[in-house]
Length: 333
Ligand code: 13P
Ligand code: SF4
Image: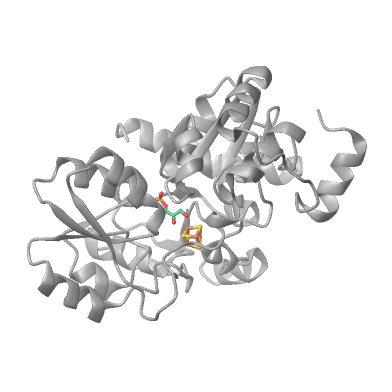
């Protein structure tokens, strides 16, 4: 447990002022802390490779929520972004949920402030609200069902065809689900900064140079990119497709962190990150990449920063997450 001084130092400044012994084997230390504290490390595929390698479970947003629901660990260390750790806390109020960097937010989540969304929802009183898990607890509390990219289609299809629906906050995922299901859901105008950056022109040029390459895209990408994709799905879906496909080359239109598991499980295949429409490394999520192995170690050692939640908000946000988990279990997702 952290002493009171370390706690207040971290609360004030993060881990910046704590000097780490450079000879420390962080992998071994993290394993030791896991055992000592009965802690589990859950990591998203967009985390840096070292974090993925030390994690107990790596998954997409649905898999991570399911794992957070079923774990009997006392401490959940969430190597991902804030809304993911918050979801784990909503499902586990008695457990300590740690996030290595509390600033690991999400541009998509930020695109839906609950107060604005409440006004939008009030204008559509006869609509059911399906909200993508990439949102704050405040947004979840305003929703009827949460979904992820791997269960959104099934959740929409489980509802009567005449049910009016608002889909938030990702307009690209919403439009793709509308197309897949023939529905006409009302879409909130939000998007992910990473998935909107891919250049169709550069992907098309890459396809000319690699004519046999399959294009794999996340449904958070814009429609013109999805239109040239051979496979569209969640991070887990994209990874699985690359494992079972006979193709030898893949152009990957999602955050570049996923390439680590792809390359690890298919060393003989070639994975090309889809290029962004400028010269920056914008297909790295700046929020996901705030977590580092050092911060992960320090957060486990000092048991901070911790996710804390108002109980009334937690209970309101829990209902639509549980509906998602129930529907997913029913369909074996
Ligand atoms: P999935 O891993 O559920 O596909 O979500 C991707 C994402 O954007 C997470 O922030
Ligand atoms: Fe949010 Fe996009 Fe980063 Fe995922 S990749 S955490 S949706 S900003």
